[in-house]
Length: 397
Image 1 (cartoon, helix red, strand yellow):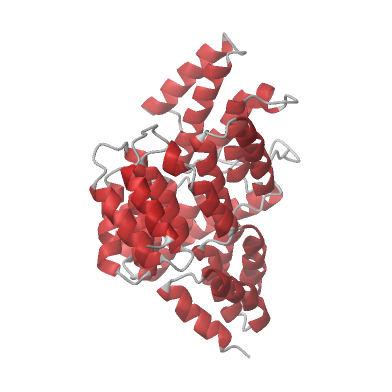
Image 2: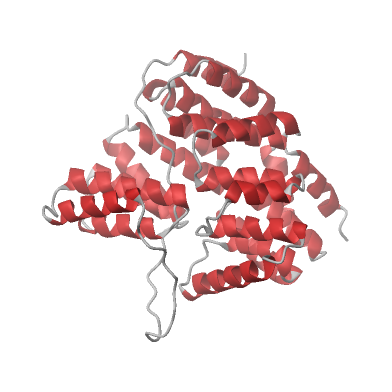
């Protein structure tokens, strides 16, 4: 039995249930001061939802006791989760504002370090996030959420060895579903997709009653593994099962990409509904409208171009991967390649590898494809789509 299989088996026997949530994916915008009052940064929707009213009430209550760290941290985490669910970066800014007194302390308390690491991760300050997590784990080596967040950061950066080492403590500190999902996610990116799929499917069958975010994360992870292995039917079943547990931005984007790859654009639009707040989901709407030759494509493209331009004005590089995909579909190969290279320096998940290969192929630039090809060779990542793209990239002259 290999190390991963033993780890997964141990995870299935794990008894501790501490209710971890996924690391937040909301994006934290860097400060930007407009040149004049005439500059429109964003048209905001009316805050009429029950959640918005509830969060506003909690914010007012905190204003009466601004030094109450437990209350501030609890509200900040709610903002983080709301932003992740809605794909709305403004929530991350609110979380940072609430925690500013503790973030700027010479020795931030543990809860502040975890929040700051999560927010730094969301704005792609991965080095800063790792420093905060290292400091936190030095103080609290049994902090399961810190280990999980560290695993997520390492995986996004393509450091799969560190990601796996960060998952291992969860075997003792977390429930079976969390530990197995963390390990399976990394193993599937490291040439062990078959074992990862089997372990994750098995623990999902034995995990009734686990809270919804964990079930959703596990199901989306399983769907992605199956999709990369070419199991279209299995992937679709897992994506649909995940949708029953929630509609966070990451899950919707992954499901939409699956449907776009199958040229099922109508289903993409049904999946996304009327929500246009998240830039990544708006891009997938545009790609679906392009497949359908829809009349709505022109205003969608105008909106996306304005958002990418505003992001650049703020000095952000958060959307480089998404903007590279946009340029591949609606712009120039040269611009797409520049953005894809910029993105690959920061992020090395399968979608980042794919967009760099696609851009290199479109630009007929064999040298540009080499970092992605080297990464695929080193990790032994199993992905039918990337295998096909890699073959095309190696044929470039």
